[in-house]
Structure formats: structure tokens, C-alpha cells
Length: 438
Image 1 (tube, rainbow, N blue to C red):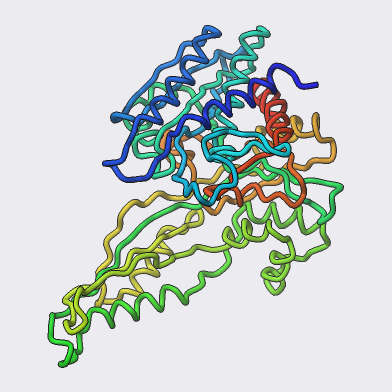
Image 2 (image 1 turned 45 degrees about the horizontal axis):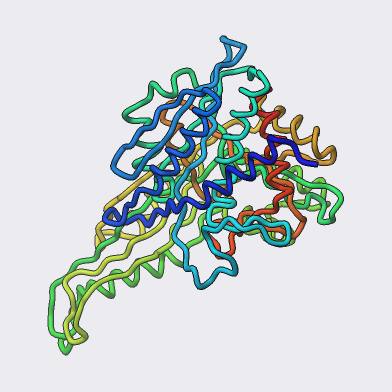
């Protein structure tokens, strides 16, 4: 039999999924979905007497922030945040309506079921539970339901950090995606590891442009921009940065190495990681910096040598590796190719031994005695990168106990995005203890 907390977490998540807060990344296509979702959250908070502030950085991009007072006035506040926007869908690829929030065979289907209206519904349910039961958490809890994370958080977390830092006064740590989901620890079904993202790769974009002089295709030139660019793209695509063992990666390798009898030595690292099954895709990308060409352009007519060609690259940076990546780009570009940086957000890194990790472990143990909380480095980035500018240490931990072959990370941005209902109930129970005792 489920509790009111668990029932509300599910129902609130379903209601949020039904609000089509799609973020296409195209300014002209901004609808009112994110603000409607924010108003829904604000109304559910107001029903139990929780005051909040809705901030609309631009029309349609609404965020809601509220603060629950804690009992220990000397403790730093904890920011708990979830984004309300979701990525677009190709409805033909879905077995069930992407905004129907339907439940089939024990799974809740819908865009945002994992990324991340499940958590928005959960923390909203926990806040309402505290008021109903007269529970006062140990420290102040700042709840933030944010717009625009799916296109970088420019009009959500980043805007709030730049323009409304007062909303986060006294906050020392933040809790959000991507982590908390269980994966097999031993390779069997008997023990589970719950991954906590204590670090995130930085994300940056850059454009490399080669220039020459335009000419007729029948008269090849020595400064063909396409050729120069192609050489740089081939070098970027073929380069593998060296392995860099961050604290989060090393802790993950230590725990999984002991559990599975793997050495994770420099010589065996690639094979040992590959043996982890679907978990390997999470870990492998966290071992090194990556620079990936994603867009190519140049020329418009086959018989004309263009004066310019360009490529855009997606860059993912380990903590402390910004200059190493920039130097690599300079080495590749040499004097032939110009580099223009776009967005550049550095990696974030928090301690793998912080007291809050023990809080996560205690909460997991209460509901899964065999569960082990294990730090890892997230190869993507979240809104924690923006809050880091305020000195806030970010962690990714949305607790979900799932079947051993269920790849939670594989649900992000996927068709038929879904989460088991019992995993969401588990999330509500564990999250309630974390926020109460952190």
C-alpha cells in the first residue's frame, strides 16, 4: 500500500508531463509551456501555504523559487532544483502519447518521465508532505523549478544567478540530476550501486573557419579553404585525449574494481570499462576530454572554390582541463584556421567525501540495505554549472531503484521515455529523508 507522499509524487509528475513545455532551442518557437508548468508548481505550493516567487526571464520562460526554513540556522542552505522544460518529440516514434502520462505495465510513459519532471513532482510532493506533517528539515531548503535547461539554462538558472542571486542567499550545496539511479554493482542482481554525480564535464562550443580566395573549380588553388578545414576536422576527429583520473572517476573505479575483481589499470582500463555493460558508456566518456566536429559548411556551387569553410565543434572538458583543450584547438588550427569560441562553461567538481554523501548513503540504506552510493563524473552538464558561479557545490542524485538491465541514462531524450512507478515511489521515500536530514 502506497503512502500519500508516494501517490502525490506520481500524480504531480503526471500532471507536469501533461503540460507540453517543449524547448526547441529556437527563440521564435518559445511557447508558454514552461511558464504554465511554473504556474502549476506555484499553485500546488500555495495550496499548502508555501510562498514562492515566479520569475519570467522572458515571455514563456518561467521559473519558480521557494524556501522552506530549517531548524539549524547555522547550517548552509541546500538548493534542490529541477527543470520544467523538455526536449521535442517525434510522436510517430512513441508507443504511447508522449504527453499523455499514461501508465502501462508498471511504467509511467511521457516526455520528462526521467528528464526530469519525475523529480520536479517528487520534490514538490515532499515539500507538501513537510507542511502537512509539520516536518521541519535540518537546514533551509531552497526549491527551484527552472526554465530553459535543455538549451543551456540561459533564461533559467543562468539568468537567475546573474539577476536574482538573492534567491539563493546562504546556499552552499545543490542537488539535482543526473545520478541516483541504480546500476548492478557486482554484475549480478544482488547488490546495486547508486551513482552520485560529484563532478560534471564542462561544455563548450567553438567554430573553426578556414579562409582562402575564391576561384573557379577548374583552377585549383594552394589555399583551398575546404582542404584546409578538412585537414583540421580529420585531426580533431582522430585525436584521443589522454586519460585523466579525476577524483570522481577514481572513486568509481575503486569501488567497482573491488566489487567485480577488475584492476582498472592503465593497461586494462578500456577492456575493464567495456565489461561493465551499459554502465560503460557513462564511464568511458568521463575518462578524457572530447572535441567532436558536428557541423560542416562551405561553398554553394560545385564549380566554385569557396573563400571560406567552417566547422562547429562540441567540446566536453574535464575539471581543470580548459587550457589543455584550448591548446589542442590552437595546435590543430595552426595559422591556417581561425578559432572563435562560443559558449564555454567550465567543469564543476565537488568533494567525493563530503558529508552529504553520507546522507545519501543513509537514506539509500534505509530503503535498500544492500545499496552502495558511488561517486562518478557526469559526462554531460546540468544547471549545477550555473550555480557553481555562486560558490554552490553541486551533486546529481535523483534516487531510483530500477531493474538491473534498465538503463536510466538511456531514457534521456529518447522515444518512449519511461520510468517504473515503483522506482518513482522509491524516489519519493529516499528524497524525503535526504531533504529532511541533509
